[in-house]
Image (cartoon, helix red, strand yellow):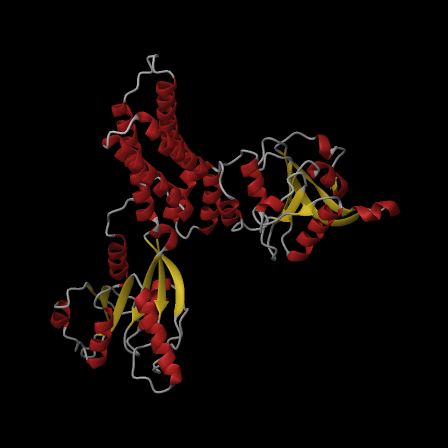
Length: 468
């Protein structure tokens, strides 16, 4: 998708809700023809001209097929509410109309087809938000935040992202940009008018760069620390056959996702689901039991298990409390001992044969549970959270959850700060500092969408759905 192919003078329309049976569905229209188009297919209750009603008003009536007007009939399609948002006080800063109808693919597609027939075109993915960006309603960082809010997996991530949507990200980075701009202007004035008192010296530049570096490095660290709230922690259940991995998997999910039987080899492939533990997204994989393969299916299943273990951030090594630690357990331990491992001793409701003292010598956390009776599950969740998070990051104190392209920009600015600082330390004159300062400002502008290449724009807006 090329954003340069967008014709911003067109009036665009799309279904903004999932086209499935539901109480409500929404068709959104944006552009200079939005009101005239709706006036042709909307029959409001009472005598009113929909093209002249005030902004931020809601109107009850019926969508009609205008093709029937020639026959002096009004073919009613659906009973609707129409929301009017006039420019510039709308999401796109264009005239926007939203038609709220009953949900369902047939009715929504029929209303959309009538809108397109009257002169709108179907919006491309993210085109409403792209217009909001182009028209100055949001900056590029806020556009990125909208995508992240839609994809947020936990309330903690949503909490941080909602602050970014309000412009908190832009506020702090504009402050940093303002400081760099002030240093640049003073430096240029000092070099262009040396006879004037410009009230700047090399030490002031050095202090300003150090302050900027400290702030950006902190934001970058906060984003890295908080990334787990966006991407989640990969947690794999492993162990021999019939130790209760699938039962534990269902316990953690709080629903029956994996088949549980007393028959060995029930799980032959990896099953993966995401759960939230204290607001932290945990991607849990239930894998096939580690065993001596009897056929090529067993071999493939065990290989998938080992691959999932290699990719995991945390390994839940599930053991049967009623069985001694044996050769198969020892083989598996050799595969996982360098990972973040939690020994999960299951079936504590049965007679105990497993040597817990021996297990303690491996130096990994041990949690005793009964997945069947749901005993010890809360303690296991707490242990997973502590190992994932290590208690070092408080999402409430973190300002940002940044995307990779935003972090890359910050890293490039930090490189330029280091370059300028080295020039100062090596005794170079002020004019040598101008170029890295200008390059810093250029990079900072990209965070808001200034002079940013189409690749980054496409990367962001192509992730939006058609109606956003």
